Amino acid sequence: MTSTSKRLVVLVSGSGSNLQALIDACRDPEYGAEVVAVGADREGILGLKRAEDAGIPTFVHKVKDFDTRDAWDEALTGTVASFEPDIVVSAGFLKLCGPRFLAAFPGRYINTHNSLLPAFPGMNGPGEALAAGVKLAGATLFICDDGVDTGPILAQCAVPVEFDDTVETLTERIKEAERAQLVESVGRMVREGWTVEDRRVRFG
Image (cartoon, rainbow, N blue to C red; front, side):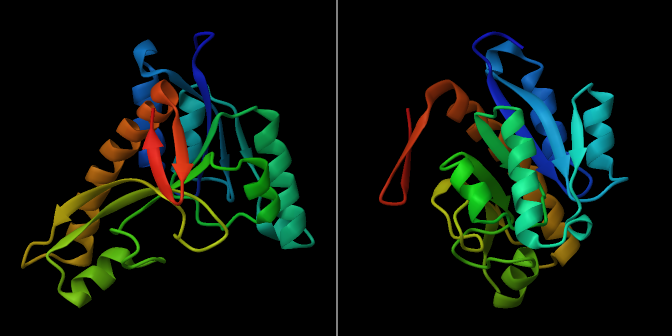
């Protein structure tokens, strides 16, 4: 990590393919960022192993280990803040963070979603896209706010829907596009900076 590299904390709940894409990108000093910690809401997942294999510190905060959701949010906020991140990335993190967390990282907590928002928010974007008969699906990278998949949009990429697509095949093609978009957009954020004006995000 160089003295000018920006610090990323990545949150995961599963296999961590988006995390791996960021880890790989950060190996290039010109990329401008370093993953300094990886957090999860469950143990024994591939995402944590990917981080450990790369020598990145990890932590786990399970909701059930706390008396209240607010207590979990407080703990998560404190741990993430201890790594002094410039950007916090939700890379398949399946928990909604609370107001305390959002207030701690305003405009710096980003999430990727497998639809062209505002269409098909929630957990089943590709399935809903197929059911609706749309010709274009895709992925959206956005800044998290207190809604569900409602924050200002950083980037979007379209993925054509094939006539014989299943949820599985469409999901996999979206994931490939999603990974590339995440790496490119985080790179632009750390190298160029970004501002938000009336829900519109400007790089540079």
